[in-house]
Length: 348
Image (tube, rainbow, N blue to C red; front, side, top):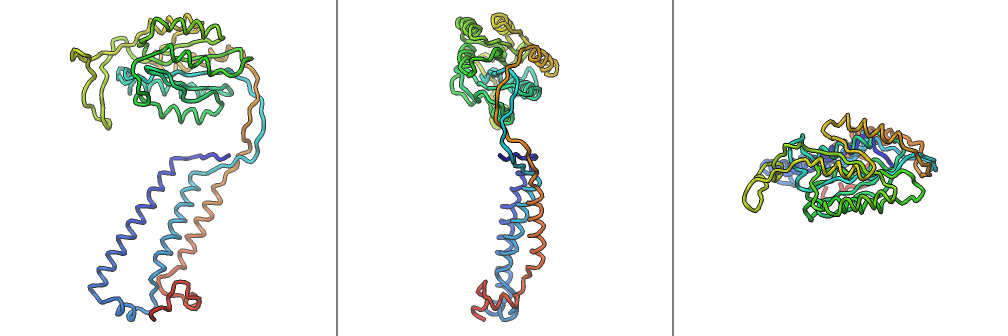
C-alpha cells in the first residue's frame, strides 16, 4: 500500500514536456543557424570532436533526474505491514443534494460547495467510524459504499457536482431508501444518516413514508440545511462565467429558498435533529457531540501499518543522475569512440 504526503507536487511534472519542446525548438534553431554558416560535411570537418548524440543523452538524464526529484518531493510512503485492528464506531451515511438549486449563492461560495465542506469537516472529526456517500437529485445514486477509507471519501466528495446526475428534481425519499441498503452490519446498533440539502423536495408525499421505514431499520436521520430563507436565483455558468439565471416556463427568474420545515419534519420523524449549516464550526461541533453520545460497536478492519518514507531513494537517484550529467560533455569521448556506441566512427 502506497501513500503520498504532498500530491500537489505531481503538478510539477508538467515541466517535463515543456523542457522537451524547448529542447526540440533549440535543435531546429541551431540547425537553421548552422546551415547559414556551412553545410553538414564541412561542419563535421571543422568540429571533428563534437558529439551529435550526447545532447539528447544529457536531456534524458536531466529529465529522469527531474522526475525522481519531483517524486521525492511527493514523498511516497509504503505500508510495510498489513494487520487486523479492532475499531469502535458507528455507521454513517451522507446523502448530499446535487440538484441545480444547490448552485444558489445565498451562502458562500454556493450551497453545494458549502455542503461538501460540511461533510469534509465532519469526516475530519471522525476517528474509527465507517462512512458512505450518496448523491441525489431527481434520483439517488451511490457514490461510496460503507468504508473506513476517509481519503477515498474526500476524493469522491470533491468530485460531486450538479452535472453528475441527468435526472433533475429533488427526491429525498429515494436518497433515504438507498441509504437503508448501505448498512451491511446487522449487529450495528447505531446507524446514522445525514441529509445535506436546501430542503426542496419533489417527493414530499412519500418522503415521510421512507423515513418511517428507515427508522424501523434502526436508522437515525439528521438533516443539515444549507441556504437562506430569503432565497437566491440559480446561476447558469459556463467555464465559471455567468451566462444567465434560471427561469421558469413564464420567463420569470426562479428564486430557490431554504425550506427548513421539510428538513425539520424529516429529522423529527427520523429520531434525529435539524442542524443549521450556515455556521460550519457550530454545526460540526454539534454533530461531533451527538456522535460521541452514541454507543460504539466494535468491528475488525484490515489496514496497513508502519508506513515508511521512501523519498530518500528518489532524491538520491536524482542527485546521482545530476552528478553524471556533469561528465556528459558535448565532445566525443575517446573510450566511447572505441566502443562506437553512438556510431561516431561513421563518416569520419
